[in-house]
Structures are given as structure tokens and as C-alpha cells.
Image 1: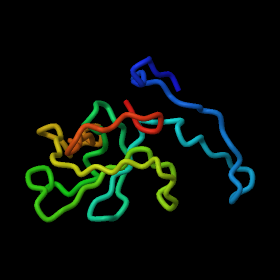
Image 2: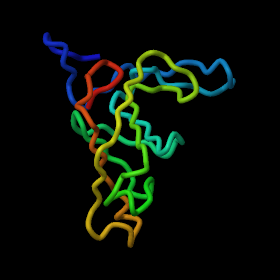
Image 3: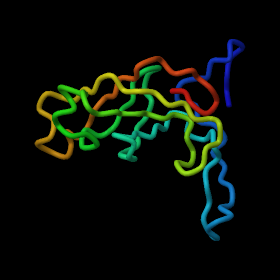
Image 4: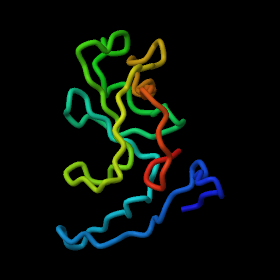
Length: 135
């Protein structure tokens, strides 16, 4: 992983993208845990919903269809959790960084066409950049 002397990672720089054997499923390969550090996992009310990409230290780009339309104006009653550094949703590795979403934004005319299926998720706090989680 490329980092400068201040332990900052370069934006858009992938980690080790070589593949490793999947011991549970023969003939399938897995990416290394730090290969795609901008990859985010989004949970709505504790259920896996979508993936996303970290585009700034507290913003994740995802699909608007991941959320109920009402959530764009009021998150009350819903818990949206974004996890960075998560390689396997079913097995904790100690690299995971969970954050609560505090705001959802989508284009004002979103939803009429598939090409409008885009949203931004604002995280409660800026992330702590690591080799497993950064832009």
C-alpha cells in the first residue's frame, strides 16, 4: 500500500490486488483484504442492503434504490450503518470501521430512470484512514 511519511494513503490507490485461493470453494479466488480500501458495506436497520464507494473522508457513493424514498427527507426510526474495511460480512477480521449515516442525498429528480439511481451517504464522522479503509 502506498503511503507517504505521514501515514496518509494516496487516493485511488488499490492495495495488493493479487488473488488468493478460496479454501471453502475450489476453483474460485478471493481478493486480498486490503485490495479495495474504498469499498463500503451498507446496512439498513441491521440488514445488509448495498455496497458503496468511499469518495471523501465522510461521504460514500451508492445507489439511491438502496433506501426507501422517505429516508432521503427523514432518517428517524432507521439506522443506516456503513462499514469500511470489511472483507467478509460473516467473519470479523478486526479491520472493520463502522459509521452511522447522518444524511442521505440524491438528485432532485432521482428515481424516474435507472441512470438516476445514485445517492450520497454522509457519515457521522470522518473515517480513520488505514490500508484497509481510505479513498
